[in-house]
Each structure stands twice: as C-alpha cells, then as structure tokens.
Image 1 (spheres, rainbow, N blue to C red):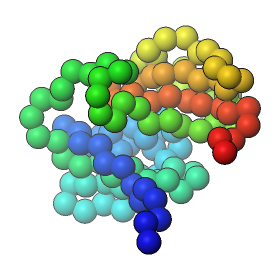
Image 2 (cartoon, one colour):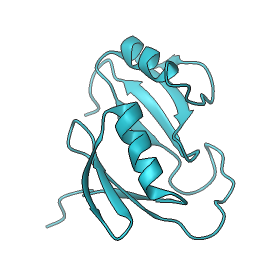
Image 3 (spheres, rainbow, N blue to C red):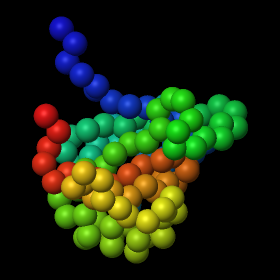
Image 4 (cartoon, rainbow, N blue to C red):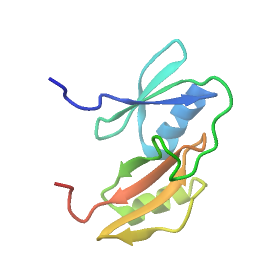
Amino acid sequence: MFKGLEHTAIASPDPRNLAEWYVNHLGFHINFEYAGNYFVKAPNGSLLEIIPGEGPPPSATLKTPGIRHLAIAVDDFDAALAEIQSKNVKFLGEPYENQGNRLVFFEDGDGNFLHLIHRRKPLP
C-alpha cells in the first residue's frame, strides 16, 4: 500500500532561484512548476519540491532535531567534488571516509545541508 517517498519539500524565500541552484549545481532539471512551486528532478528520478517559504529560517546544525540533510549519491566522488568546488559552494568540512564510504557536507543556495556520498557497497 505505501510505496515510499514521492518527494521531499523545501521551503525557500526564493523558490525559483533555489530550483535553478539545483539545476546549475547538481544536474537536476525543473520537472514541473505551478503557482511559485517548483519540482526539480535528479538524474536518478528523485524529486524535490521547492515551495514559497514564510518567515525567517530557523537556525540549525547538522544535529538539530528534524530533517538535517539530503544525501546526493555520486558514481565518481572525486569528479563530483571537483565539480561543486568549481561552483563555489559552502562546505561544512573536509571530505572524509566512513566505513569505506566517501562523503562531504555542504550547503545549497539557501543554506540547507546536503552531502555527496559515494558508497563502496549499497546499503542492504
């Protein structure tokens, strides 16, 4: 009956600008838009909905309760890292390895937390 996540929504003070950030930085494309809402689709088919935000954003850390990051899967960690480094994103630390997986945390155009991840072997 329940199939899984269809999309994740991010509220933004400028939804179009953030949608274009995902297009220009991570290879997504704007799949659908209506009334100031944008669905951006990743090359693997996953979707984000970017909606108009209201009020100031809360301050958050990587451990503040709630949704804390979106993990962006990559085939070639070094090439993906070089690509986003060339686009002047804000990194939250240096790349590192954890249980054979390579990752690095960074921010999107609105300061939401993302991380690149290359898994040595897929999760079960």
